[in-house]
Image (cartoon, rainbow, N blue to C red; front, side, top):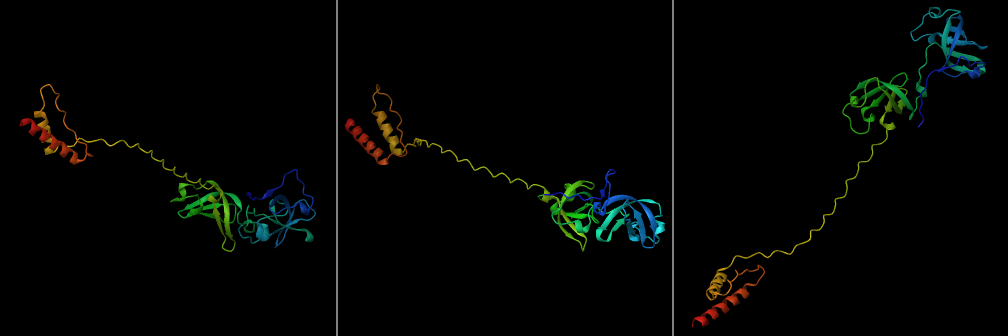
Length: 262
C-alpha cells in the first residue's frame, strides 16, 4: 500500500527556477517585496513575473494594513499557492501551508502522525491536516482493549490508514489495526488419543463360601479317611459350577458311608 507523506516543498539552492512551469504547489521560495497596495504585496521571486500575496495570506491573524506586516525591499519567505500560466499569474502565501489539505485527503491513504490526545473512546492523531483525525478504540488494535492507553500514549508516532473523510464536517476517521497483520489463528486442539484397548484378563475364579451341604460332605470324607491317607484338601467350588453336581457327590458319599458302617 502506498504511503503518502505530504509536506511543503523546498527548492535546493542549486536548483534554478527559470519558468512558471518549474513551480509546484507548496514550494517554498525566498523573495523580495517590490511594493504594497491595499490588496496585498508584489514579491520578486526571480522570474519575469512577480508573485502576488493577497492581504489575507500575509499572516494567520487578521491584517488591517499591508504595511503593518511587510515593507518594500523586505526579504520574505513565501509558498506557491497557485500558478496560472495562461494568465502569467503566480499566487503566493506567507502562511506556511499544511502538509495535508482537505482536498488532498482520501480514503485508504496511509499516513504517519503523532497522538495528541487520548479519550476513553479513542485517540486523536495529528496527521498534518487542519484538524486531527480520530482513531476509535475499536480501530486501535485487533481484539478487545478496555482503554486506549493499554496500547498507545500521547506523543507516540503511529502509522494510520484513512477510513473516511467528511470535508463538510471536517472529520477524519483513521485506523491503526488496518495496517497490522491479522492475529494468527488459534491452534486447533490436538485430537484425543485413542485409548489402547486393555487386554481382558480371564476372570478369576473366586472361592465360594462352602454351603451347609458341602461342610457335611467334607466332614463325612474326613471321618472315612485312614491315617495314612493325605488330608482331604478343602473343597473349592467355582462360582460357575452347577450346584446339582455337588448334590450328586454328596449323595454318593453318604450312601458309601452307610454301606461301610453296616
